[in-house]
Length: 388
Ligand code: ADP
Image (cartoon, rainbow, N blue to C red; front, side, top):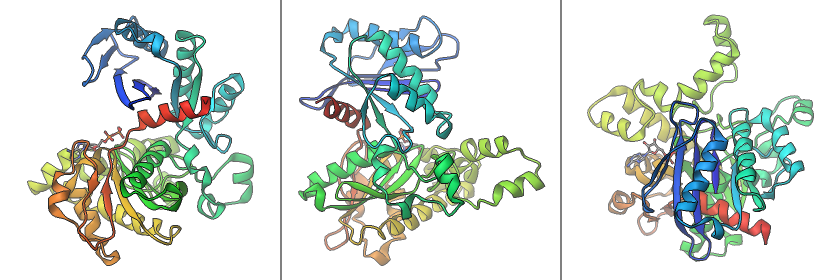
């Protein structure tokens, strides 16, 4: 599995029989002096200096690491995370020249992500010639949303001619955790109704019924919806004109601030890291306290809204770095949802950290679950399914 960002590549080798990670790692600062490639525990920690900048050299480095471990012969396919698949890609797809061209055509919808994804795919095709390569799209899972959930109330030709609609992201994670929740609760997936909150550096929430996404908080881009580490989430569309007029900011500058300097970082004036904010809030930092409150309130408001298309709720799922580790965020969020009947089990909530999965509510309450997401495994499984 390869996940290529603009200046980093995450990779993982997974054994699909026992679903274990054989080796995983990260090549980062690809365009700075002496970029490096590192493997993660639990595999042997190894480090490699890359021969130069860019994605192709990083993928060559990954191949070199696999060779050291005697793995290349065992790799049967490569799954690539691709952020935006537009309306064209409703599921994972085997990559050929036409698919590459269509991923490129989705570029304007994700200018920061799709070009980097393509660089990674091309580098992998060169480094691993002859291996099947599969694109797994962040947006594909949400292609089941009905028009009344994905359309914006804007002129029709913005949609028909320019693709202006809600797409949604984090599909791989929402798909994985809702399948896991169905398994944990022993309900057939087709009978389930879940609200799934993926809370990492980027955050989104989805309504998933019968294993299909019916609505989600992210939109045309991954900026809409929940408060995130450095992204604002929802705001008044009139804000851009206000800022242009009063602060003389260009559209590019506004976009930059809303993506990189807003969210938890902007509100707190301190950090985008939830751990740091929790510590500061406990020490009385008012900005950190406010950031936490806005984050949890917006999340609860969206969780309630996501129940609308479901008609019933089997469980609210927390996942991602914050969802899996922040007992405080979970407690505050459920605190805003007591009117839905949620009663937190404080002891269970406290121990549900560092990759553990399970229930955090008391008997009689609607269920809230923490589920450790595994996007790498899901990408590998989807790639396997396409090829079989
Ligand atoms: P990404 O979206 O980049 O994959 P992650 O899913 O790793 O990000 O989530 C990163 C977020 O998780 C950060 O805000 C980080 O502070 C938060 N986080 C990680 N561990 C903890 C913890 N123990 N308590 C609270 N927040 C945590």
